[in-house]
Image (tube, rainbow, N blue to C red; front, side):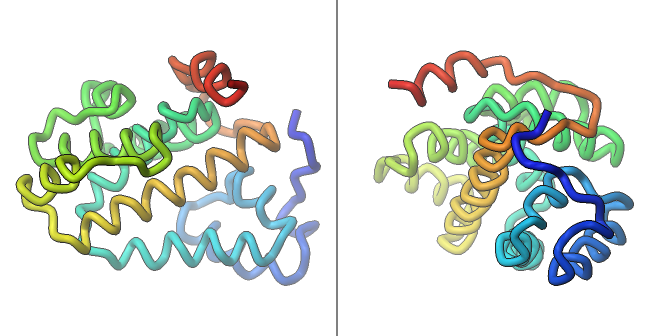
Length: 190
């Protein structure tokens, strides 16, 4: 059970309702993540704006999805994994082999593999990557702008993962458990 009440769309603060309606139009539903974040209209606006802005970026849309899966696994967010896996499966964006690779911090696509590995390392090390990590991304064909977008996708995934984990957001998708959840929790407690 969520640590704070998850409002209905109608029960959310008035300033959040238009953004929730737009989310419903875009996704065909309003996931619990958006409804729980909607308790703060400012936080919901930040989340929606971040996604809208990144949707206009140069990074390949499938690579974005792969990054979300990798970061969700790194931080041990069951809600994120459940929602993201449901999304990419139902839209037939990624197959099960690719989802498994992404959850392992890799990709079966050669170029995307570099981005996913970079993103997973960013999440694991809280951004403490090396010159070689950035150079490897460049050599794989990612522009400096796309490297910054990878970082931005990690950041928004960290926000949603931290919100879901801290608030224990009720999962409204078929449940997918993080394989390294115990490890992620142990690392946080250190």
